[in-house]
Length: 259
Image (cartoon, rainbow, N blue to C red):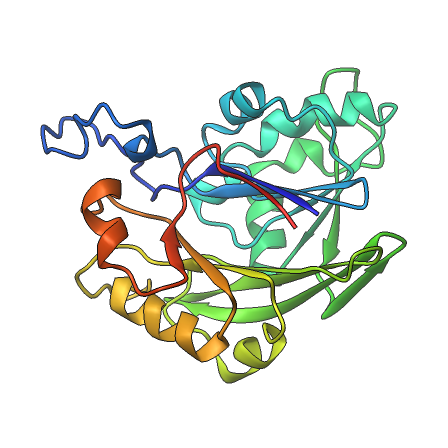
C-alpha cells in the first residue's frame, strides 16, 4: 500500500493570509501546508480522499495521474471545494462518472455545490460527473476492504476510514477532522500499521482534537506509528517533533509511506 499526503493543513492553510508569524514565514517546506487530503494506492487501486481548494496543484506536485474512486469525508469547504477538478479524472476513465462515496451530509453538499455534475456521464468532454453513493461500513473491493465509521466534528459527522490491502494485509487508518475518536473507531483501528489523526494545535478547539487529545487517542489505539495532520500555524515542525511521544510524528505535505 502506498500513501501520499497531498496536504496536511487546516481550512486556512499555512502560511495564512497576512500572518507574519515564525511558522508562516518559515523556509522549512514541512511548515508549508495546503489543506488536508490523502491519496491511497491499494493493490493498484487509486483512492482519493477529499479534494481541497489546492487539489489541482497537489496532483501536479505529487504526480497523481490516476483515480478509480473518490471518498468525501464531509462537506466542509476545505474538503469539497476542489471537486470540480476531478473532471480530468472523468476524462481518464473514458468520459464516465466518477463514483463518490460519502455521508448523507456530504451528498447534500455535493448536490448543492455541483448540481451540474450529478450525471451518469459528463455533459461534454472535460466536464465533471459524479455518481453519489453512501459510504458503507465495509466497501469490499478486489484490492481489499475500506471500512468506515462516523466521527464527531461539531455539527456534522465525518468519515473515519480504515484501508486493508488484500495482498499484504496491511492496515492504514485515516481519522481526520474529529473532536474525538469513538469507542467503535478505536476498535476498528486495532492492528493498524499506521494511523493518521487530527491534531490541530496545542490549545483546545470545539470541533478538533488538539495535540494532547490526539496523542491520547494514539496511545489508546496503540499503532506502531501515528501521524498528526490538519495542523495550524501554531505547530512548527522542528519545535514540536521532539515534544511528541514515541511513535507519534507530524505529517507534512508530500510525505509518502509504503506499507
